[in-house]
Length: 257
Image 1 (tube, rainbow, N blue to C red):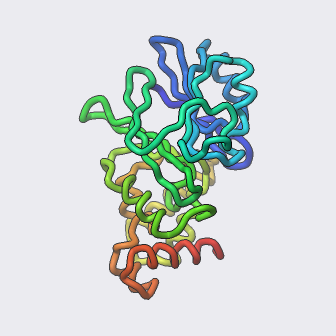
Image 2 (tube, rainbow, N blue to C red; image 1 turned 180 degrees about the vertical axis):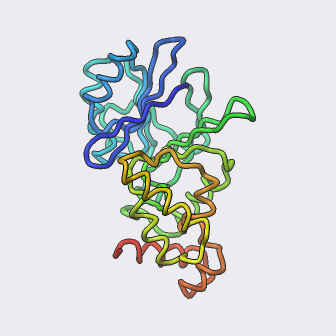
């Protein structure tokens, strides 16, 4: 399973999954259709599935046009997103599995950004490889999504599920927000040497307009404050040892950053 990263709109990424043996493709969160159709043409591939993480337009805006081109598409989304994702015909819950390119993907129910958000995790086929996590707008490189329909406690629970995955998991999040996220992270976790080093690396990448996605989950665990709500220094900075409150205060500061 190859993953192609397609930059669209101002800062979105669409991820196209490709099975070279079957000449088939699936797409994660198609904000728009045309870049997907162009990549399919380059690969001479048939689109067989859409994996949506949540209902926001910059994640499902291409569904209807892709369905016109491929009427037999299977369109996946969370069960709680019923009637909010165009063309959805499979309604997923925590623990369900999806399949593409002979790979089994696990479904996580991760509300917080929205009430129905899900993620797709494809474990590695061998110990030498990395797993692939498609997490939409819940976990970002260096940050996390805003709480539009959920609570801090829900988001802590959701991010806890993702944090338990192996360190070598590749994190395919849907936006190029990394540099701004790390600028904020330094304001609350500035003594973190790993974070300082990561910021310099990311700043250099963005100077050259290079993508910072995918990230590695192990790096996120070390440098992303929104996965470190139980870190004593961050708890002290937020004035509480309670995980949801620590997280909520961090998220509130980021909202105003």
